[in-house]
Amino acid sequence: MKKTVSFSKRSKNIFFHILTNCNLKCRHCYINKEQHGSQTLPLEIVCRWLDAFTEGDADANLVLLGGEPTLHPDLADIVKAAKDKGYSSVTIDTNGYLFNDIIHKVTPREVDYFSFSLDGPTADENDRIRGRGSFATCVAGIEAARKKGFNTSLIYTVSSGNLKGLEGMVPLVKKLSIDRFFIQVIGLRGKSAGSKAGDGEHDIQQVTDQEWMHIIPHVAEQIADDGIAVTYPKVYLGPEESFACAGKVADNCFIFPNGRVYRCPLCEDFPVHGLVFEDNVLKKMPPINENDLFQLNIPEGCVMNKIIQPDNIVYDRDGRPKFKIACCLLKEEVYRLS
Ligand code: SF4
Ligand code: SF4
Image (cartoon, helix red, strand yellow):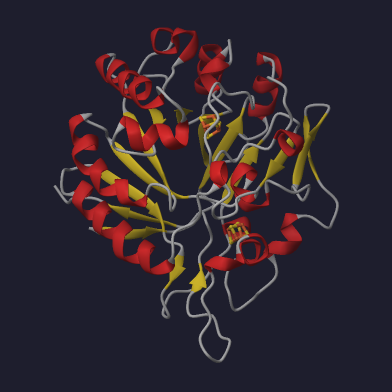
């Protein structure tokens, strides 16, 4: 069964980058230290910032990110503090290295999901993008987390460099007993924003509309047939489907160590954040910021997509966009009915 996950203000999703350092150098990494800061936030500051999102009735889901969040020496205490503060769920996104013995310092009651990243079904395919040894370490990390009883997700970021490997993930995801599989589209942000086809190290690009529409739903169905929930971005809207900007109709926050808080991930390379922590108090930024961009209605759909990655818009002979580009936060979920 497939369904589009509609936006809602009934739950908040807080994506908290507690540091930007990482042990890997993935070719598509979107971390941009100039725009996001390079500090590791102390436990006390993380806790104060977490308090800013627990007011009101909406459930708050927390995703802890980096860089590599398990490099943070106080990650276990951050998890426990988040649960004490009433966060409904806590997920740790990791490259699988699981530093600081993290899986031995937290329990499956405290961490709802460890979410791992692989970008290929074999060491050869994955390590070309994420670095030598990263496949074996990540697989070992997944197995160790499973053994400790944690729920696990796997994230696969699709680009021209690994589209062919996606189908190979079907048996691997099953073999590793993954609970949820996320397919992401490579964003032209951070390192990828400097990409040019054929320039060696950075020659990975977004896939075409035809490749996306023919391959992604097909692979998602195959994985869902094994009883694993699959989520992927919608990207292209059909003629009957209406466009909505999550910045206006949902409650997502993307927090960075320098205090910037964005509503839209596509804005993260620019100083257009709508909110900021100043002296540990969350404040609104003056215009012009991302909130002003969210108000613009254009035939192409997402304004930020048109600004930073216009090459994924296809026009007909009359210059009309063939598809509207959906908000990057609009997802399709595929799962088997039990
Ligand atoms: S693991 Fe994540 S943060 Fe680290 S380099 Fe790769 S994409 Fe960037
Ligand atoms: S990706 Fe586009 S549609 Fe979604 S929040 Fe950002 S500007 Fe709005």
